Length: 502
Image: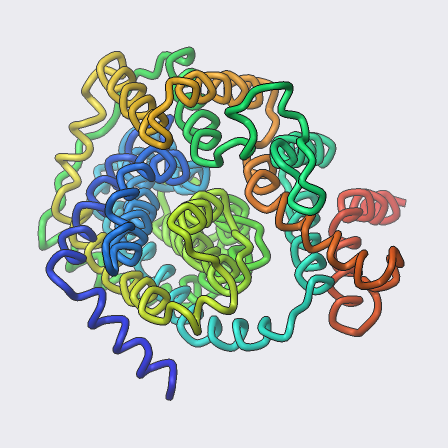
């Protein structure tokens, strides 16, 4: 098959010594980021993105850069389970469900078993998602080559509406955050008319807000400010993983193959739509609890309660890259940051990427296989080391992260204006988190806002202002209809719930 041949070519790219070292470095950094509450995958990738600038300029450097960033992401996915199980503090939002049974297992002296189950399940979930990406991405990309401006706008609309319809909190807050993102994306020169918009006389804003400055501030500074305010104190169980515990746990895991399969399916679906890793982990936990013969033991230290959320979270986190690669539409906040990185390096994610940069795409997909193997090895061998980092006072860790953020923002344009702008975005991110407004929709709108606007205006020029172009054929009409259904889904679901009560 063509996909297998292309994947083999990708392994040739990914298996160079330089890329293997970058994988190990990325996974280790990612686990460290995942272990520290207050950071997380999206924050870590955003903070470390400037490190890849010079790397991406060299020949083949973009592939090395994306391998480094994606491995940071895999590492962060693994690291979140450590704090959830040992300290009852989720390192990531999607690790919350892991605490339900992981922490009780640690209290019973089964921390090693819980960690082994979590890491192995994460590996399986990600592996299933990478296989899906390997065989589904070329199909989606070939199909997307037939897209015109109306189809692309309908896909963007579907993405925006999916965030509203599948959001956990208030849909109004999601829409408000998205509108703020659209406003920020509109700053700068209008690409159609050449007019200045919302620059208020600042020459630095002629090109609009730099995506990188915004995400460093929103994710990095905002999270650190919130964590400093909360004054985290880490108290938890110690963990020692040895070969006997790992082998015994691996012998027990195959009997939960149905749970792994179901959770992988839930994760892949939620990653692609894009629902995200957090709802996927909760959904998989709930399904496992309902379907398991030991459902009444969930919450008391049942290993199946660790397997389900970890498998689903990794499957969702990994499969979220599928729409990013094939359509240029990120399926998660971290994918949005990675998408921003590709744009900064001069790459245009989308169906043409498979034709114009096959080495890059297949090198990235191959690195997903290798990065997950590297991640599993790193976390199984270095758990005590990463757990010990949590005993370093946050008063030492926080200033180090703030300095890294400031250096990263300054190196974008060698300008102090960007550092001040980063601080403003940091305060904005802090306020959003305090008021419980989601950041992901704002980041999504900031990344895709101008592209959606261009597609919409091109569609209007094609149709001479007739909105009927978004229902002109079956494909664009069905995507637009699905988008509108998702937009109003919170109200529809509430109405259905009221009818059931009656």
